[in-house]
Length: 175
Image 1 (cartoon, rainbow, N blue to C red):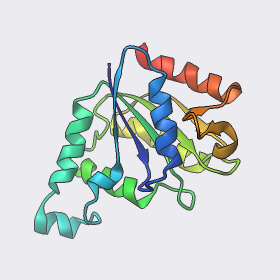
Image 2: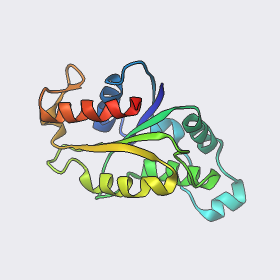
Image 3: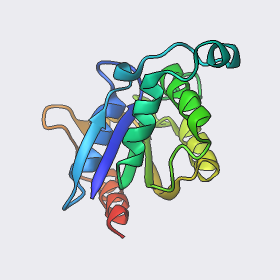
Image 4: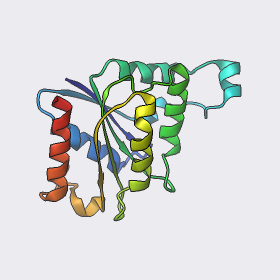
């Protein structure tokens, strides 16, 4: 199974990228490509810009990456209760190529933050909208208090209920 993973963040120290990378390491018999949204920086989407210049080649490249995988794992950063501007911009451009951005792929959605809510607001939005963009949602998980629950030195969740929930969730990609 080929998994495409990324964090919905442009931070070079993204805790969501650490989480999504660890989560994908739990899937047996798979290969994972972890994308960095910084590699897909484009002008801010607008219809005027699309009419004047067309769809950026980076948007097509990102969309093609999705088409070439079997499953997607995304971990969302929460900026003021919503998607980060970096994720939203890539998503908006890709939706102009095809509104079915997730292309029927198996989808696991994650989110984390340093605080106790674990970016649950943005995760709720993502979960609710995934079917409209042709995501085959297999499950989702919010990881609260990232620095309490994640072992930065070893790059993994500490033992406990949250780690067990993530392991059970990632097994769903093999079904």
